Length: 181
Image (cartoon, rainbow, N blue to C red; front, side):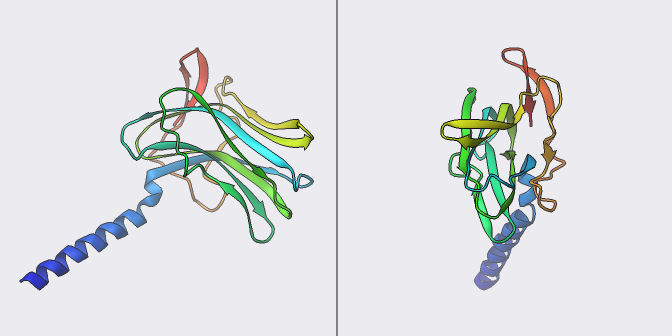
């Protein structure tokens, strides 16, 4: 009887773990854009955005992220997993890095995990064009009521797509439009 109970408990734990792993995609969504970075190899870049979160649970968070895709091998990657955004106050966040040699594109965006309302505004991508000179290559303030060419997902296969999340442009705080996930 004790052996059967132990086996049942272990089976339930394994089943629960498999369910969690299989449904991991159900817990997050991403919106992103990809740009060509040919000619920018070795240059620094920075992605900035104003972000705030209204969380429904302790696991929820918002993030900015950037990935450098190369012809061969892995390039720069930062998704702010080590510094999730959980504040309810508007704050400027930055992901910065260097465009790797052999890079063909820079993919960047925002994502959120679990339950809450996640607000994003004034998203900018700049590439350093000279000493202390930055060229703005993407800007989205969402005031036109559009998502400004951000696409759902992470620009690789079907990752980051999630029908359980919705996106809308809302008028928030100071009267300006924001993206709400």
